[in-house]
Picture: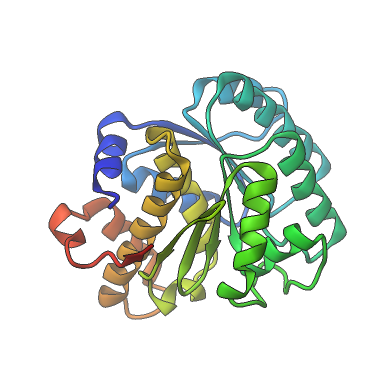
Length: 261
C-alpha cells in the first residue's frame, strides 16, 4: 500500500525539517536518508522559520523540551502553516509531566498538525488532559484509546496514529489497523520517533494525510520484520532496520503488508 509513496520519496528526496530530541537525532536522520528523503535537524529560533519555508514537511518532537526549543517549535509551526506544508507532531511523554502535556495541547490548538503520532498513553493523556504515562513508555493498550484517538482527530481536524503491536490510524470515523512489526522494535530507543520522522517523509509526497500515515506505519512494520529476521538482538537491530529501509523492494512488500480496514 505504501510502494508508490516510497517511490516518490526516493525519486524526489523531499526535505523534511525535524525539530526533535537529542536521543534520536542520529537514528531519525539516518532513517530518513535510508528511505530517500533529505533530513535537516534545525532547532535554533534564528533559522527555523526560514528552514520550514524550504521544507516539504515539518516534524516536531517534544522528547527533550526546553523553553528555547518550544519557542522555536512554535515559530517553525507558524511558518509551516503559512507555507501550507504538513506538520507531524510527536507528543513524547505527554501525560508524564504538566509541562509536556500543556505544551503538546498548546501545539494542537495553535499550530494544528496534519498528523499526530504517539503511543496509547500519550494519546489518552492529550484527549483527557490527564497524566499517568511512564515517561515515554505506553501504560495503556492501543485499542483501549480508540475513542480518545477519534475525539482528538475530530477536535483538531488531524489524523491520529497510535503506535503499538498493532498500529491504529484514525481520521474521524475512518480507521485502519496495521499489523506489521516486531517485538524487537519496542526494545530499541527511538523507534517511535523514527516512525514520526518517516511519517513526515510520506506526508511530504502524499497530500492525503490518512494514507500517508498508514503507509509510513506499514513501511516501519515491514522493515522491522525484515530487520528482526537478520538481527541478533536489540544491539544489531538498528543497523539491520536501516538496511531494510534502504533496500526494501516491491517484491518484499507483496504478501507481507497486513492492513485491516
